[in-house]
Length: 288
Image (tube, rainbow, N blue to C red):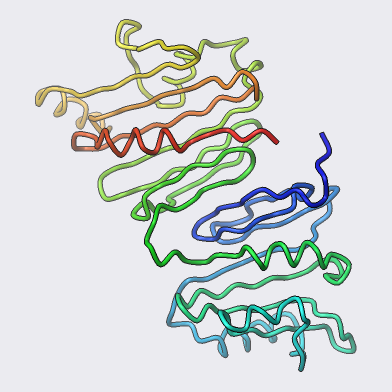
């Protein structure tokens, strides 16, 4: 399905939130590096760094040395409104007046953001405008963080930190840590192909790297759930196997979107059920 050029979706990744035109594909390159493509060609990339100790002058100097880009004297109108919130520098190739990169440093949180354009940004002025008008690099309310990439989104407490991620063929998996609590978020596509060779329950146990009797699995409409709350003796035995004793997991089948979505929690201590339910309610598959 081809989306209208002015249709946008919200992208949230590791502290950055912005609205992106639907016709652009967004790929995670690193923990703080997104690449935006159109028709299989890169349009621009966004990198960011949140260490407040790094001064903009130092970052700018290193950037110029690595790229041989030169500072522009003027700021294009579409970027002007950002100067109240960001310290802004535009860079161009020698002998060119059109900017190639933009370095922004937030005056509130100190996050530095680097936009690097592979195509002439003036040819995509509307895209740039939509991105810049929606860009967020911090939340003063300390609210839950949005994780929204591909066709899924989830809200997580700000105490959760990304520990690993993988975007393999058909399987996206994000792992987070919050003190002694570990959480894994999974998204599988297409669902029908996976369900041809394994049941929903079998896939849940495989993704959760655990074993359970059929009687221990709760079957609901288009979902399966498993919870392990072991006795003291069982906790000791499980820890001897170098596994976390407390588990809670669910795998859901989104038939209309042909997707599977899973949440997997594990900890040394009893799991915070209220938090789990709140996260589960926020985790959804977005039709594209």
